[in-house]
Length: 288
Image (cartoon, rainbow, N blue to C red):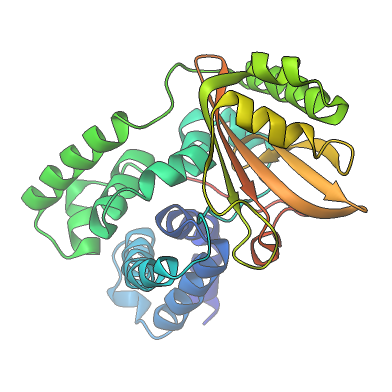
């Protein structure tokens, strides 16, 4: 039991990150880890040649099963569904590939993939597993996994953010965004927003949020300009990049992820569902 515990703890952050990137839900990722642990403690470790590979395979299979359940749950979800935001440490932002992979924008791109495509993309492109390792995890041949990886890579490439924005540029843009919202400066907001910017709000039917996307710089600026007097805004490391935490009466009411393309804000992802805001008061470890 001690050896099993040590091995699991050593790889826990990796397993959580894989499950989270496959599911977009920290709560469900934790459930996957619990299921993985229950299977791991019953394994004869003397028969396991590569503990990391075995744990990744087990966690991936559990995440795939849960991903299909989540798909059915999302069909009846009230309004837009957004990934559960995480407060991440500054060192995550320094790992550009990891930071992009856990960003709200990328997680929404991954939502457009099928379950197996998503698993293959995450395991290959983010965690650099071999095709043979992935094949065993998703119960496909290596040749099939290569084809799936090629399709998924092309699919994601068409939809991922355009133009690399440095961490300093992102923070500068978000600091200007924060000031514009707090002061109700619509013109400054319009200068920061792309003409076709989209704001998605996830209230889950629990709290008020737009049930349809808010599209266009004018509409988004008008909406944001009305909330500055009601809430306080602070910048935070959210999902590997700079995000915005909104507080009402000192309590977190909204966590906003931001997508920036070629210097302009093209996506705002406002998570308001209280069930998804439990991980923004302390850092959640993620790793590759």
